Image 1 (cartoon, rainbow, N blue to C red):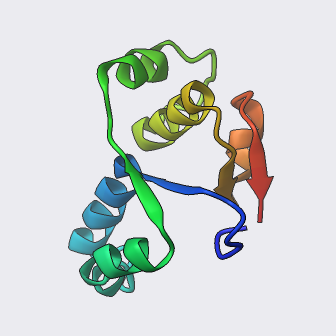
Image 2 (cartoon, rainbow, N blue to C red):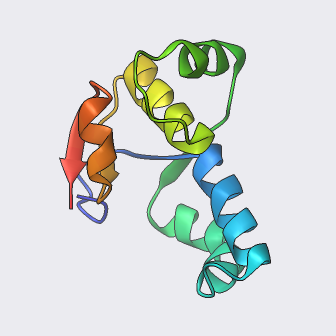
Length: 103
């Protein structure tokens, strides 16, 4: 789905923020290299950046979802507000009530 040119692509700033934290803590060694090349990858895939805004922050806090990870809650809120489908391998999102493309 990500490389299919007929699909539009959007990357949440929340994902980049989480990647950066994991790279800095040593929890995701490959993330540092991915972050270094992120601008080029986004350009090549014609991917838009999705900033964190106030409506998404409010929606993330108000989600009726017991999952407490703030990054996941933001992704769920942005997905719901923006009419997107979230591409993920994390089955926890099945309970968030948002459109998913599970890998």
